[in-house]
Length: 198
Image (cartoon, rainbow, N blue to C red; front, side, top):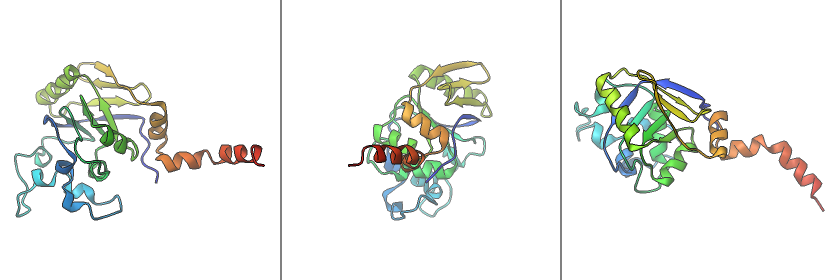
């Protein structure tokens, strides 16, 4: 299944300076019954967003109209816990296209890149600058450039590079998941098979 191509994203950001956010907090286990990757955004951070009677919790950041954007900025060790893909699905389905943190759990990071959600790892010092920029101006914009592999605080011009494998970068820039990538190589695969057939 193809996803939106990711090249350069300019957006405001939603700050969530909470460390050790795990996948059960991102999408509680009781919402994992669906097999399609749709509708999970409604239950993103469900227990943090809503009271038991389904009324919104006014003090949770996703319920605060002050903050918006396609970038979620999380604290250290984002996406820890179980390996459920649904956590990445929920973040993407909600409308985020990038998550920035100083450390991601490996499985969450890979699950995110497989569906078009870019996890960007920055230093703790730069993460703190991002949080302070949002605190100073909730409408502050940031630029995430996948071709250049940089994150820029546009108000100050400060930027930092991030790492990503060439394969994942190629797929994200083309809107591919692993199956789409194989389909894109169909001609080469067929030619190889013909040359090496017995």
